[in-house]
Amino acid sequence: MAVFTEVSLEAASSLFDTLRIGKLQALQGISGGIENTNYFATTDQGEYVLTLFERLTAEQLPFYLYLMQHLALRGIPVPQPAGNREGDILFTLCGKPAAVVNRLAGRSQLQPLPVHCAAVGQTLARMHLAARDYPRQQPNLRGLAWWNETAPQVLPHLDADQATLLRSELAYQNHIAAGASYAALPRGPVHADLFRDNVMFDGDILTGCFDFYFAGVDTWLFDLGVCLNDWCIDHATGALEPRRADAMLEAYQGVRPLEAAERELMPALLRAAALRFWISRLWDYFLPREAQMLTPHDPVHFERVLRERIAHPVTVPNSGDCPCA
Image (tube, rainbow, N blue to C red):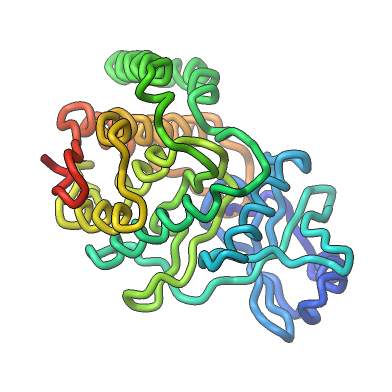
């Protein structure tokens, strides 16, 4: 959500005038994130978020936007794209693909308690089930193929120990992905980036999940692993914190119990989720793009998480059991 493309109030007003959501009064650039240009937009009818897509193409974007619409219409608390009279929800602004969604109420919970982790787990499971009949198909563009393609670009920037870790873990994940147990994992559209700053709360009540622009068809277990690796860890060590992890898993399984193949591969997919974000943060850190208000995330954090998942595999024997067995 850095600002790569400057948008004037006048230029944005022409788009908002077609959306029937009020007259645009103010734009404020959003500094968080690193993928797209985002602005908070205020009209005389409400608060919205304007996004200009810097990497995703107009051919890729319908998957994300219509997924959000699909989930919103099924009662999942996500932003709903604004459409014009013809029903279009993808537009062009300043030469870039663009969309406008409603701004969610609440605030991010950056110091989550078990109650917050449970709310995320329950909502994630509901999201997975609600998207089962979503008709569009698009792979997770930051999945295994991207890891294999990107690793050689970041390897020259690593020391010998880090390079050994990256090569060995990538080989391990390729081996896992070729196995029968992995093929048996249930899958469908996933968020793939449901970090603490992509969820809003009002007190203990989850009010919405946003930033679906890493979504794609992948295993539901990978999506759950992403959440566990962010919401339920001790940041100093990368270790899972049992009370929060147990709360998330119990709430998730209260909606959709994990299958046998998922319990078997939980340790591997938690490692996969850590590897994905280590590689992407290495890429953003060492090969950054120019942007106003851009601050790349520290890649060392997910290196630490990955090493912890390798050293201390996490298992879930049965529904409701503590995940740190």
